[in-house]
Picture 1 (tube, rainbow, N blue to C red):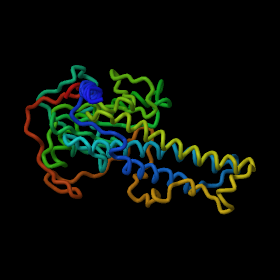
Picture 2 (cartoon, one colour):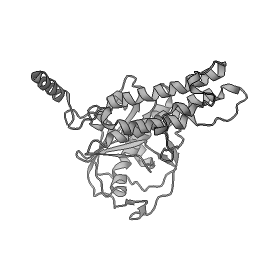
Picture 3 (cartoon, rainbow, N blue to C red):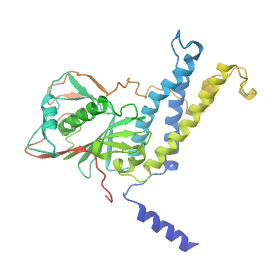
Picture 4 (cartoon, rainbow, N blue to C red):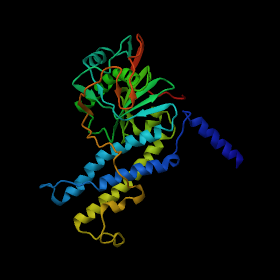
Length: 330
């Protein structure tokens, strides 16, 4: 028995690619709380009357709400898991960055993945901005990954929206080093990659910046992250299907299980211990590409919220940009 335990431990060590590992059980309370809040928000959504859908508007509203809140749930779970890696800083708030003509031109005319001696100003005024869902910064390796998390990218394939999203993400990757240096106490990175994360885990295409959710281990450099995300989606799906079944039964006039009682409501499917205020949930409407109107930028050296702003990092220096790549055995 002792030999078997040692062999199993040796096999686990051999499979481990990164020094940090997480299991769903390690953070089960945190992830279950996120699931509970997301399900509660979906269950209590109030649809507007619809002359075409009629009584079916409730079912349609549930499905639409799931599409939005699952994306937010995936983002929040990635943040919770990312906190297990002491080298990783996952940013999710106030991430609106300018997409400047200079950065777009640099992307259009440079295919080498390296720009030398150039500094792209994060304070530049422009009408076009891009707000990443998340930015993961590995302080040990001075690298960053801009993450756009999608519930599914199926609707983006074979459309111009995917190409536009990638272009603006790449342009933003040139702005990010200056932004991190100014907004996050002189945090410096030399490498910035982009990754469009497909929550549905369809076949990935790293050459075009598309990563399946089951490859999230390599983006966060945390072994077991993908397994934890898979379990999160399974539990979320189970709760959501209960809501859909209950609403479908109501629509066709079937008797709901007597154990639910006469006062049944969708919110009863949610664990009361997990239902809390959604004040911390980001209810920002996610448009096709996550772009929005530019906001005013304060003068260099000022303050934004609790962030300390620093002058731009010294140049010349090399900034490597492009699609995210895995670093095995880190």
